[in-house]
Image (cartoon, rainbow, N blue to C red; front, top):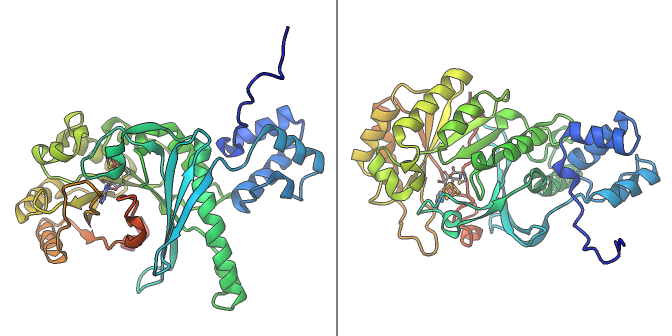
Length: 382
Ligand code: SAH
Ligand code: SF4
């Protein structure tokens, strides 16, 4: 006896979980359609960001119905959406199909002397994080689960819809030329979670976001930030993709680093730096070191001197980030003047650095983490 009527209905998978080749296989093998149809579907979902199969009018109606029966498009349900008072930053909170919550941020930068205007999305790669850094709001909440490829890509698509709509509105009001509609220009994997602990899904999401027929964000405009998982850094070096790598260093010696970053006991600084040197050798690409300045903890001239000695001679750039205090964390921000002293000391060792200014601080409070760290090669005029 088989009664399907009583069987619980599983949620449909998101089409965003499929890579381009998965989609092609599905469309050709399961739906008996041509590869050309797969390309149309990919473009509709990933480039035009259409949220409903029925609205893909280039497809025959029966195929639209088949797609709707088999898949959903968007796995994210928007719970909250805030825009900062200065209009530069949007933050969205999403509920996933199983109830987990994640955050995504869009940061807008106007053109300045040496950089073009850009729109950067900061995506999450895990719900929570297992690594427990003491200054990090996500780390203090613990690990919930890995995000799927579709859940990562969908965050970018959500922000792309907003970015494209405002670009188009600017063209209509003649604040912009038609040719300058570009939507999201940069993506940083710096939201909740550790991307290299969700390696395969993060890489598949990067390839989807980079795809020329989809969102088409250039690899050099994509940055992945890691807590410093040494073996995966070496693995990343052999991926054939020119993304930027940011490594969260946050201290110049093992004692100081282990106090705030438990991962340092597994991959101490010597092991981490060996992996970084190997990465630079293989890729010939600069590494960005993130250094959150924690007042009194890692921000003295003595720490700067040690850091300078550690990084001297390595192809790298340091981003100094005054900490964004979390609600129950003990840390305070380093003053701008002290950050500049730190920077001057690093320069004596030939180590270049930038002090990051925060964006959207007024809407960042609940999160304590997703913030301005949009670093890419362009930033340095490379
Ligand atoms: N897990 C990865 C990526 C997500 S965190 C990583 O740790 O690199 C992205 C960046 O935000 C990291 O450099 C992290 O150390 C930093 N960060 C976490 N909490 C912060 C806080 N309260 N203030 C400033 N930066 C913070
Ligand atoms: Fe995890 Fe990164 Fe937060 Fe550390 S800083 S707890 S690795 S998300």
